[in-house]
Image (cartoon, rainbow, N blue to C red):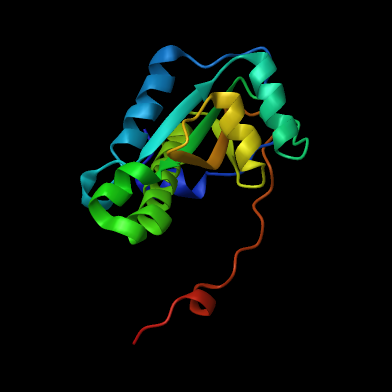
Length: 173
C-alpha cells in the first residue's frame, strides 16, 4: 500500500477510462467512507454525495458539463453537493455561503485521494450547469452541486503537468 505522499504524487486527472471494467462495490464503499471521514465545519458534514452509475444519467451529466465525454465513459460519477441549509442552521450566512461549499469540496478531495489509493483514477469537474446537474440527480432545493468526480480504471496515464514553484504560492511571515 502506498503512503500518503505517494498517493498524492500519483493523482492525475484522467479523461479516458477502461470501458470494460466496472468498480468493485467494496472499493466504491471504501472511497465513500473516506469522503464521509473528511473534516467539516462543526462536524456537520454539510454535503450530500450522489453516486451515478446509470449510463443515461452519466450521459446527461456529460451534456450538463459542456459535453465532457469522459464523464459518460467512466463507470461512476460522484456528485458532491453543498447542503447549505444544514450549515446555515448553525453558522448562518457564512455557513450557507462558505462552510457548506468547503465541506463538500473537502469530502471530494478525500474521495479523490481514496480513488488513487484504490488503484483507480478520477477527474474533478467544476465546469457544469448547477441547475441541470441538480435536476439529473434530483437534489433538493437545499443543496447545490459543487463538484463532479468521474471515477474508473484509467485507460491512459497523462503526463505530469508542470507545477508552480512552491515559493510562488507559499509565504512565510
